Image (cartoon, rainbow, N blue to C red):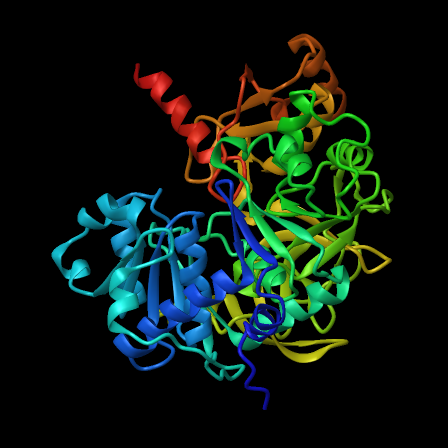
Length: 517
């Protein structure tokens, strides 16, 4: 059995080329040698102050040097890191911390006020405050851990919490084996080299950030943290830092295009562009293809339960578009991963038939943390007519597989609503709205809605120059009248979740406030 640590590549490059840049943040570059010494120091504190190995360590930081050092330090020590986003309410943070049953907490100096607001019970957990990734306590009281801990594929590496329908966060525990398969496939596809310069835009509590961190330092490359004020329009940053790999969400394209920032050959240095997290409009991909003409472009898909992403579509093939949606398909599963579609009775269906998307393979996690009931519901053993008996994860996403084996994502099952007695998919309305308004930043919100049923649709549009009458007429040409929004709201911006998806819930709350006032 392979016991190599997830950061074995980082160790090799840090010893071989300690003066190479590993991380760039806040106009400060950190070399591999600097990163290594700080990682070894925090790993020493984790190993000697917190036992046994595989302990769960909460990391209360944002996208800062302390957060990166803490994640790498936990992986180096063989511990399980639990990212805690300081931007979410303290009450929810405490709920996550209690659910995770943390042994220790590492927090950045900028999060001191958040930590002070925690309950006495939380503050009694072993904790340490870092300032710029350093701590006098660590340096004076503990020896650095010079050699990374041996790990097994079954060892946990991180515990991520996502939103739960009951209001309680759902914890997903990924193992070393889950992550190794993902990282191995990514390297086979993108061939990261020492000259590569990767972006870092995702919050550490969003599992997509794992790609930025581990893919860069394990291959001698560098990752560059996009400043908070440039997250929506990072074009100048991409050019200034001469990034060679961009990993973001499609809304980045929509916003930059609206601002007129995507002229031809804007980003000649980019050799790889990866987008995920939400549907990729074909129009957006066409714009990006012109702006980054030398770039390989991929649309990726995957839930946290299947370790970051597990489907990919090469968008240089502009024919791979989901019919009637004008969005890029999600493509095919990664090597050794499997996709299938089932009907409402959990029976596998044939090609071109719509149903729920299921995923199987080595990236599928063991289930939900301390929630056997939900695990049994969403992770099940089924016998597939071709793949045989396998353990499948029920994604809750609508999809179909076409005759070429390409999968097409149709939205969330829970984004299906009842409208005038009909079953309606909000993503279908979004697709027509994008086309009618000639812009990508749109959202259809059921309103007023209760218990999955709505009396109408309100459309939010950002960046369209078309007249409302024209938009409505073009939608009526395609959709039945009951699916056409009763109200259109033109907005300068749309709210997005921390994961970069349009926040329909926040838009619905905005409508609710209008009624109350």
